Length: 498
Image 1 (cartoon, helix red, strand yellow):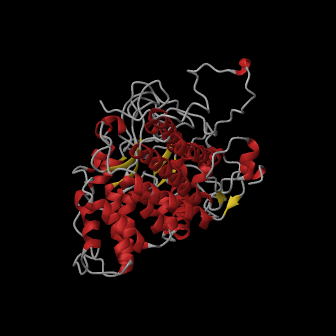
Image 2 (cartoon, helix red, strand yellow; image 1 turned 45 degrees about the vertical axis):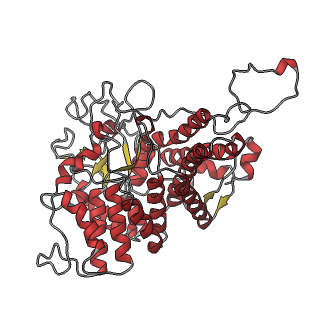
Image 3 (tube, helix red, strand yellow; image 1 turned 135 degrees about the horizontal axis):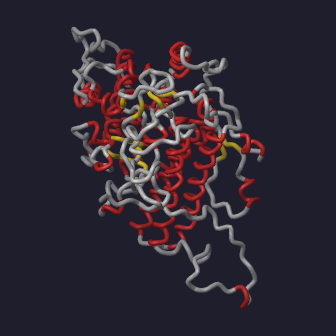
């Protein structure tokens, strides 16, 4: 059975004030506190495990709503009886306010992770650990800080840039002012480069499965450069990942989501979950199931049939984007369920479907970066450097297509649906491939943002969603009328003067 990184919660800041030396204030020598912790490799390993921990709640909680359901890939099944899920509907339809708790949770969880990384990086030099151990700890903390900031800056734009350990409320207020997005990106790049320099290509031992590596940091930095349109800087990073020979495509696309094959050869980074009573499980199968399933046919358990379910439902736009005979469709979407409420086929995500012993607790990991993504990123970058009717851009695009059982796309192909005759044609082809290959993995909204397609795509998508859903439920009149590229800054943070 696979082993996991157990993500123990730790304090993000010491928060323990010193006091005068006297006999009444002495602590037992075996009591861990801010003065005697952060000394040994084991303690720093526990601390860095704690820096991974917020990602678990982030991915089961709000990331799928803000990164996937915000796009044209997924929507929701309207529940007329339980209206407690309106905060998620608002995100899907671009009508959330600054008090949306899903958005606020994303912001808070991300900064919790950043705070834990800051503590580690601040305490590490004084510990004088063996250099190799210190580099691995520092590299992971630098990556996680960069990763959290990359998500924040794409979601909110300007946010506070906090790089030091905060030991008091007054300290925290001093660094709470928003920094310009450009400065956030500068720090992300610095942290990612630091992680690349210090992280290993891989780890020994099953207990280290899930830790970020040099390849993970290179993938992150390549995506950052692509977001900045610096494709020439992304190319060598992506080529280095390929030439490392650490990763390979799974022969079977569905293996990427098989709970018994997690952390496989294609995995570059995935959020780790474990089934059991320890609070480290995932619940994607329940959250993404239609809410009106009244038996155990979908999740293996009877649902609560309310606002806990019915989210991230694949849209008709996505289903129509699949080409005939694409093997990925059956591995990604289940289209066999007929809604009891509406009498129509209600598709649901199949990628994270495994039956746990207890309802709402499974061990399904969530993929963040896969090797197929690297192929498609490199194909896109090469095309942006200049269109060529052959060569590596087409090769990497078609390696992904071939696994899906699809014919190659080429320049001058007699089949118009496979003909890619220009740079713009290739942009369309790679965007389509990314939409299908990486659906339900929180890439689509970010892809629409960085390619400048978000407003046009989502305006058309919104009009179609209203038309499709009109016979079954009424969408709010302001839905999709204001396609915002950034989420509103959380109200609670604004009230603090951020």
